[in-house]
Each structure stands twice: as structure tokens, then as C-alpha cells.
Length: 320
Ligand code: 13P
Ligand code: ZN
Image 1 (cartoon, protein in one colour):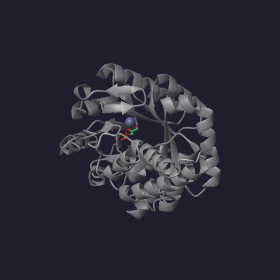
Image 2 (tube, helix red, strand yellow):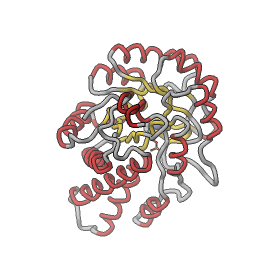
Image 3 (cartoon, helix red, strand yellow):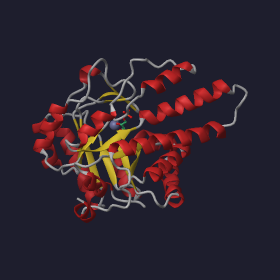
Image 4 (tube, helix red, strand yellow):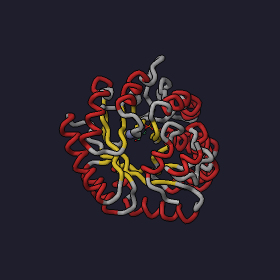
């Protein structure tokens, strides 16, 4: 069943996090919905601006309508990830999304705020929630690359002011993660002191963690053993850190890279074992299974398993 993003976030706050999975093709959508059904967990399905222009919004939204019929038991919300003003307007007009992210984090504070406020006014008039971002994550997301020197952690006082003045409904914070496979080196991890300071100023307000992929070393090693050449120092966010972050107001965790790594591993291994094959269906089936397994396990870790059907906020109060 299709639910509103904000409803999912509010019901999860402080208790579990909703996995927000970046998907782009039919195999991923089947895998995602099967994984969510298996874990009986609510999920957020998200498409980026760039994926919408790659696949065509009508194709993606059509696949979700099909998924809704095929997997009626799955509770999901649909979100535009990393939108600019134009794609936010388009997503709002389409009627297929219950939330949009306006990503103006690369602009100076006042400009980010102004753009976010413009989108919030439009979105709220249509009953749609808005995620904004303050601070700058390192790494590569679609066509944007941010170097380590340009990355900026979110300032807690600015976060409070930004939320108050912009009217956004959730805030993506930069607390040390980055986009892509190369998040941390050595013993680095999330900046919990920063996250705690942000939460203190924004008590009860939904916070979002971008760059939530774990980048398991086993996946990277298997990809390389099957002909890949990924940097073995690639590392992501440990699941223990994700769980800890839930206690500090992180309620939505964005995961895209892990799904792409599994895709690469499955296909590389398949064609290494069967170099004479050229049919897309056998590796496609394996990918759906592997991605479903990944999604179910991630939902379990984030605490969302078994929560499908729990409607907030009244059901939350009844349950606590
Ligand atoms: P990852 O690259 O860690 O999967 O992050 C995805 C993301 O933040 C999408 O918005
Ligand atoms: Zn992101």
C-alpha cells in the first residue's frame, strides 16, 4: 500500500529507520518489493533526478504502479531524491510522489534556504513533504562530485535556523558519510557529537542520512575476483553505526551504492562462470534474489521489520 513519506518518518522516529532505496530498473524494483515483503517492513522507494532522465519518469512511475499491484502487502512511499527545482516541480505535478528532496546544499546558506522555501510552498500546497539538505557530503552522486576539501559538516545552529525559516519537513545532515563506495578510510566513522548537537536543537524533527551504504568488503573482493578493479580501501557505514544514529533522530537512511555493488558482483560472476551465455534472464533472476535478500536484511537491521501495517501516529502511541 502506498503511504505518505512523512507519516512513515514520524511513526519511526527514535525507534527505527526507514530504508530509502535508490532503484532504477525492473529487476531492482522486484527485488526491493520482495525484500520488503519478506521482512514485512515499510520502505521508501526513491528515484534521483538523473535516474528519471535516464529511464524516463513515466517508465519508473509505471513500474511502481505495477509493483503496487503485484505486491499489495508492501507499505511504501515514493520520494524524489536529489532533485533540483525543475525536477521537484515536475515530481510534484506528476502526483506520483509523496515527498521530494530539494538539494540546494551546494549553494550558500541563504540561497539554499530561499530555494528550499520556494519548493516547500509548492509541495505543501499539493500535500507533499520536502526533504532539504544542509552541509555538503563528499563523493559522487549521479552527475555531482564533491571533493573531501569541499565537504562541510552540518552546523547545528544553522540547522535549527534553516528548518525554522525554510519550512522543510525533514533534513539531510552531513555528519561524515559520503556518496559512493569510498566513504571512510582508516578508523573514521560518523560524527556522533555533531549529530547529537543537531538533534538537541531539532528535538523530534526527522533527520536523514545520505550515503548509508555499508560497502561490504566481501562484495568488493568478489567483484575484483571476477574481473573488477575497485579500490579495496572502499568502505561504508557499519550497521552498528546506523543503529546508533537512530537514537539521535536519523529516521531515513539512503542506500544506493550497495544495490549497484550487488548488481556488479552478480553479473560479473555469472558471465565469468558462463562466458558462452548472453541471456539477461539468468543473472537477472539471481540479482532479484540477491537484492531481495539484501533489502530484507537491511530492513531487519534498521528495525523496520515487522512494522508494515503500523500506521502512525495513533498506532505508534498504542504500540509504545
Ligand atoms: P550511497 O552511495 O551510500 O548508497 O548513498 C546513497 C544516497 O545518499 C542517495 O541519496
Ligand atoms: Zn544522497
